[in-house]
Image (cartoon, rainbow, N blue to C red; front, side, top):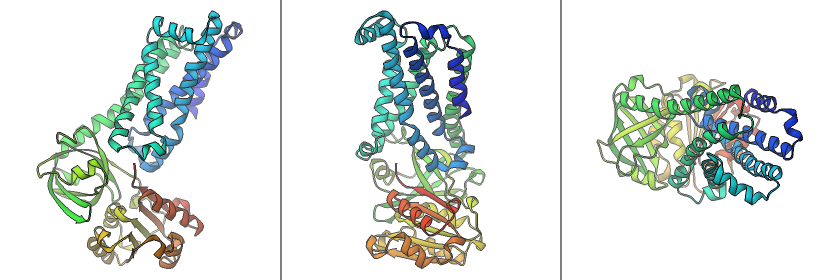
Length: 423
């Protein structure tokens, strides 16, 4: 909020009162402010997904993505309004038509064509983020479209400083915004490029073995160097980039299903799309680059000593590593939910860890109607629910239902930790 307030103050301070009284002056001011605020929010969007560890530990990856999606429509809407209102303002000032003025912009004004392309790319990314459309897209297609947001902001940068009415003739404002832009770019490059490269070179991970866990589920055992120095807690995940000809260009988030036991670390993947299916066919020796670790659904987030872990299907991969990281005082109650017994992934390992912690394991197998829903099975299986932290991982609908049930059963929202397995 302080940053947004500073943007508004800078914009107002840079505007001379006389400029508001000329033809098109008010529209030009409104359009300029819309552009400033929209661009500021776009930079905030970038920071939300730049994987800054300190922020990620507070909000968690799911929390950051929720804020990213809530904020998403605003910068695109404001920047679109900026383009339309500013064009109207210039058309009023020159006593010409809006379409004619737009053509003049493209022909005669430096960087205007690049800015228009940048705005078109932002709108394209915004449309691709509409939930109904996103569900119909391959994740790889959606991801490539979103990469164009970086290009869109780069194309807009020169236009804003060169032509923005708030910037022209105001070197201090130009310097402040150039610093903000450069700082944002530096943070993104550091945490999304520099740090992952350094970490990947330090640990030099490669595939050691791929084996089947359940129908459509495989575990990838990796070997690496200095894994004892890999600071990861149970429940966290990496963005994994497998360096093959077809997969090197994309990183996907997969939970660590077993904490490092040098020189080994393991992830477990359900085959849902092209990428996860290709991961199941990886050969030993395939090199791996990593980003992370990420995730705030860790034992360190607990308010209480005791916990209950609720896993829907493949969600057990994350919670299995949480179990590995819990003290005996946690006396965990673990609830595994799957349509069939064969789909209870990592069943034997989970049972062994639960026994070691003097906990209780419940397996809910069958159609959803047979369980009575999360509210009923939580009330029945966890009589002291309000005295425990609740960890939930799994598909979106399952997680949302369980979280909603904890609210009706009186669990403190701060004691509910969850991660949704979706994109």
